[in-house]
Length: 251
Image 1 (cartoon, rainbow, N blue to C red):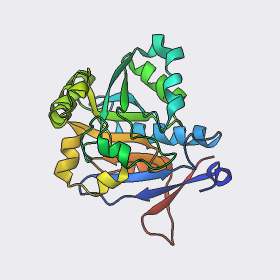
Image 2: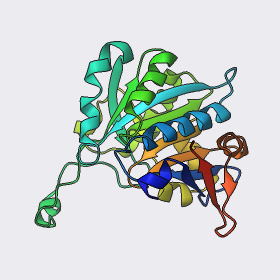
Image 3: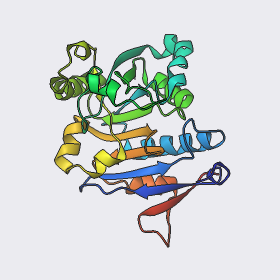
């Protein structure tokens, strides 16, 4: 999808997902997302969030995923807003991948010329202030590839206790076992390869997960329930020539 075309429309693709869960990927031209595409896709992300939430039952928890080799400038954008956002720094873990470890001899031996070592730590930042701070953080940070929203019936403290219970036992490296919280990181390949029970486990009581995904080049939306309300909110129209693909008007 070209940047010029993305100003007027975006492409949305349904992912293979174990029922009753549903997942889609809203494509972007790349990260960081350029304006005005960024502003348009931010509106899409907020629309999806609104469609999937129930104010009387669900809480929205906003996190930022900082990976130095993928979105290094994102970390620099947090400091000017720290007083309002009250960020709390934790550890991001990919539950469908090998657990994080220190660099090994093989990492250095297999390093190609010009290639960087894999990151040791992927930082997860919790926006620790009120809901207004979360929305402000999403507005500012969206487009960097950092924003993750989790919707849960539980308070954030309960959700993070569950994620730590799930993820901490999988980490053998002592250096990585003392963070205040642990956040599951998901990408399209993991969602498509998981059973419903596994998705439920990874979400730790949450009902939906909306995340900018640099490696998928888009916004990943996973819900344990139907995404029809979200597609309706986006005014998504099926592509008559490509099953599972929709077009979203952005203007």
